[in-house]
Length: 136
Ligand SMILES: [Zn+2]
Image 1 (cartoon, rainbow, N blue to C red):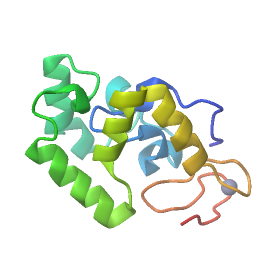
Image 2: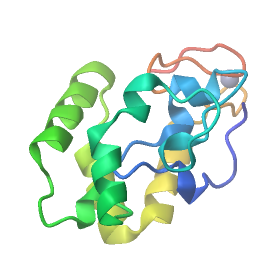
Image 3: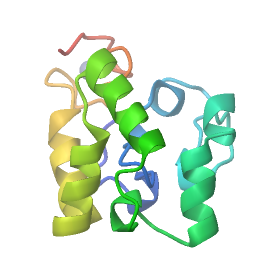
Image 4: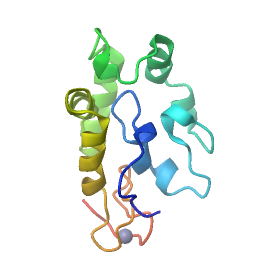
């Protein structure tokens, strides 16, 4: 999958996750439509995600716009992502809330674009979904 010139805003999950760079999106033959749109092969833990359900229930586009932000579940997920993948979802959420989702996604497109082939690099394994080059 090639990195689009602009990542669609629908790919930004309420928690700050960029669904485009999820391995389930960029490496799957039936890509998940992202946390907002659903469809395709949405991983079970995303389908059952309490954060996703909470934001949806409150009609919130971003957790960062919630008075409870950052709540325990979001902090836990952020810690997990920082530790395992070097990505802060809290920071993503704050940038999206302060500068707008488009500004965050522009940065994300640069961060996860494969330097070899302009493919999408998977956040979860650091491998380009198109040419297999590793980026860390
Ligand atoms: Zn590549």
